[in-house]
Structures are given as structure tokens and as C-alpha cells.
Image (cartoon, rainbow, N blue to C red; front, top):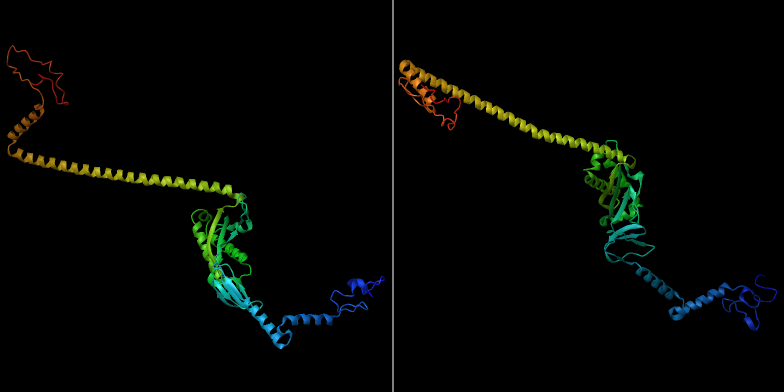
Length: 381
């Protein structure tokens, strides 16, 4: 037998007899030391029952003791169903895997495992999904671009490189949808975000995306994401979509910037031309209007002057017809009055003998010459 050896020992359990071993097996004195047989199972069970009788009140394993033991175990098991919901959590109760209700913060109760189960998702944590790039844990290292996510086609058949974030959290009012309907929340939200961004960019030209419509793009993407996830019954709130970088692809970025600069120069020159035109055209129109007004004023003045001269001539002519001789004499005298009215005169009678004509040489430089009508002294006779 494997339990005996040639030296007469008691196998792996010690000596079979004699003064040294006592003939005991590792299970106590219930073995059979005489023939070296293994321990008796019935003897082991009997000894276990004896120990259990010492634990049970009355020392008996009757029906009442078993019932008390069973009821105690049930009470302890039921007490394990108490759980605490923190302020940032919502309790999702299940019985046999079926959703039965939602609980708020505080001490709550549900049937313990394996009948009941409680899942407590965090409904206040703001989580971020990165699309188009992966940020580095080290702030000094640059982010890694993910080209297959960031390159998108615009409406004018250009390609734009967009990196953006989607910030989301579990909807506290629909936390059960988040627990049961989403197997991979981050993957689902990321796929929805990328799809929504491609849809929005595909409806816009690249120039608008790069310059003036980035805020409207982010808002429209957030709205489309929320509507899509609500359709899925995801139980997720999209708080904000943030555009991190919007630029042409790296391979053609410099050429695109050159074209953009040329377009801006063309727009600038056009604006300067329009500014010059807006300034010079009103000036030319004002000058033309002023010239027309001056011409009209000169015309009216000339017509009025001619009309006055004609009326005066008619009046003089009527008077002349009444007394021609007197009128001629009067006109002669009036004309001489106008001619000699502003001229210094020296009158010398030509019939006077031995009189030297007077020529005032010392006064001539002091007298200013008045136009072409002034005559030298002594010129009048």
C-alpha cells in the first residue's frame, strides 16, 4: 500500500504505533491506527455535527435550530441591501436585472445581490471627448493630430482640418437610459460628434469656416449631437462644443495662406477704390451743380440787366421823342460830367494874350492815374 513503507512507519500521517507517534492521524483519533487506513469520512462528519451542536442553543440540531439559523442568515442578507447615494450620483435600482426605479441622494434600500442590484452613475461630472487630436498629459508636449478624424470636406470642395472638443455629462433625469442603452458611451458620443461636424462643414464654404462662422458651427454641431443622442435614448447632455483649431491641411497650408493674402489685397484695393469713388463722385456732382447754379444765376442776372437796360432805353427814347434838342443837350452835359467829374482841371481862356500856360509838374507824381480816363493837366481846352 502507498501508506506503508519498509521501515514500519505510519505513512505520511506519522507513526502507526509505539511510544513515539501515538497512532493518530491528522484528523484526530478517529483513524484506524492498526492497519494504516485513511481517515473515515463518516467519523469526520460526526465530529463536525458535534461541534455544530455546541454552537446551536440547546445543543440540538433539531428543526427549530435550523429555522433560527436560516432566519438569521436571511436577516443578515436583507441588511446588506442598504446603500448610500451621494449628491453627485443617481441610484438605478434593478430586480432580477429589470429596471424598477431611480433614487436620489441619501440612505436607500433595494433587495441585495443576487436578486437586486444598484448602479450609481455620476451625473455631475463634465467629461470631454477629443475629435481630430489627442492631447498629451505633459503640457510641454504638443498634441497628436488624428488626420482621419480632422480632415473634412466643405461645400466649395475644399478640405479643412478641424480639431474640436465635445463636453458632455449624464442626464440626471434619464440616467437609466445612459446605463441600459449605451454600451460604449465615449465611442458613441465621439462618432456622433464627428458625424455632426462633417454635416455642418459640408454645408459651408471654407472661407466662412475659417473666419466668421466658427461660433455658429459649434452651436449647430452641439444641437445636432443633442438631437441625435436623444433619438438614440442615450441619456446624455451635450453642454458645449469647442473648436480648438481650424486650418487648411498642413500640406497646402502655406499656399492657401498666400492665396488668402492675395484675396485680401484685392479686397483692400477694391475697398480703397470704392472709398475714392465715394469721395470724388459727390465732389464732382457738387462742382457740377455749383457750375450749373452759377450759370443759371449769370443768365438771370444778364437777362435782368438787359431787360433793365432795354426798359431804360425805351424810357429815354420816349423822352427824347418829346424834346430831341433838349434831350441831346442833356445827354452831352451828363456825359461831360461823368468824364470830367474825377479829373483835376485847369481852364485857360484861349483869347487871353501874354499868358503862359500853367503846367503843375510838382503835383503830377502825387496824383494817381485813374484808369484810362485820366488826362494830363492842361489837356482840356
